[in-house]
Length: 372
Ligand code: ADE
Image 1 (tube, protein in one colour):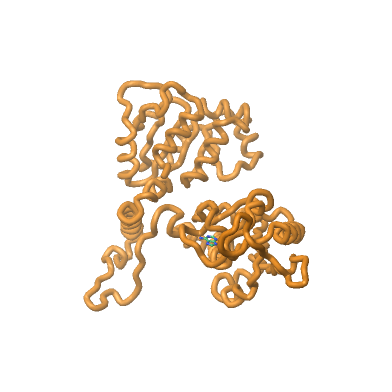
Image 2 (cartoon, rainbow, N blue to C red):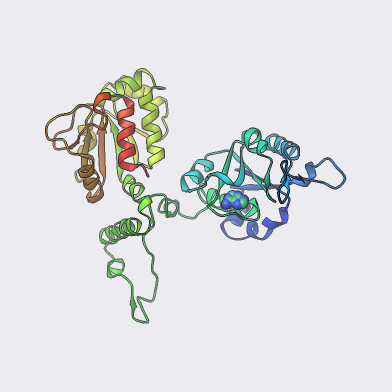
C-alpha cells in the first residue's frame, strides 16, 4: 500500500517510521510511505501556505489553491488512492475505519495546521475527513501517524500472527487481560484458568473476561462484542429476491450488515445447484453458500438458533428476551431470516410487522440487536 503524507513538517515522522512494526512494514515493502512538503506547492517566493481568515479572528487558514496542487500531484503519484484530511471536524476514526482503509490500494493523508484549512479542501478536494478523537491537536501530523499505524497493522504481513489482529481490542469489544511470568508477584496472582493448560478452559475464561470488561468499561461496545459470535443466514425466500437481483436491497442490506455490525459471517441457503454454482463463480466476498440450513446446522450442534420472523405468530419472543439469549449463548449464534423458522429455534417477533419481509425489517432487526 502506498501512503503519501502531505505535511509542512515531513521530519515529524522520521523516527517513528524507522522503528517497530511500521519500520518493518516499510522494510518489507508492505507499506511505502512517501512525503510531500506542502510548501513545495506554494506559488510565491516565501512558500506561503496560509493566509488570514475571512471575517477576522485569530490565527491563519491554510490556502485552498496550495492544497489543490498538492492533492492533484498526490492523485497522480498514487492513482486510485483515498484522500483523507485529518481534522477535528472529521468523522471519528475507529477500528472499523482502519479495516476499511486497509482495503484501499493507497492512502493520501493530508495534515492540516494552524487554525484550520480552507473549508473548500474538505468540500471539494478530499474523499473524506477523519478525526482521531474529541480533542484538538496542534496539527494533523500526530493524527496521520495514528491512522497510518492502525491501518498498517491491518495489512497482511505487518503483525506477525494474523490472529493477534483478529483479537485486537475493538474488533469485537475490549480484549481479555493478559499475564506472563511470574505466576505470583507481591501476592498478586495470575488467573488459575490461564495456567491450567486446558485450551477449552482458557478460551472460555478469555471470552467471559472480554465480555465482562466490555460490558463494565465500555457498554457502548457491548453489542459489537456479541455480534462477533453471530452468523446471519438468509433463507430461501430472502435469497429468491437476492438471486433474481444481486443489487437488491436484501443483498445490499445483508452484506453491509455483516461489515457494519461485525457479524461473524453471512451465509446464504440456495437449494438449486445451478444457482449455487453461479453464486460461487461470482466470488462473493466472504459469503458462504450452502444448499440447506439443515446441512449447515448439522455441523454446529452447540449453536443457538434464533429465527427473525417477518409475520406475527404464537410463541414469539420480544427484543429484550432475544438480546438476553444472545448475550448468554454458550457458543455461536445462527440468526435466520427470510423463510420458515427452523425446528427448535427461538423465534423473535417481527421488528416491523407492517413491512413483513421487506429488507427494512431485516435492517431494523440488526440495528436493534447490534447497533450502538
Ligand atoms: N488535527 C487537530 N486535531 C485533530 C484530531 N483530533 N484528529 C485529527 N486531526 C486533527
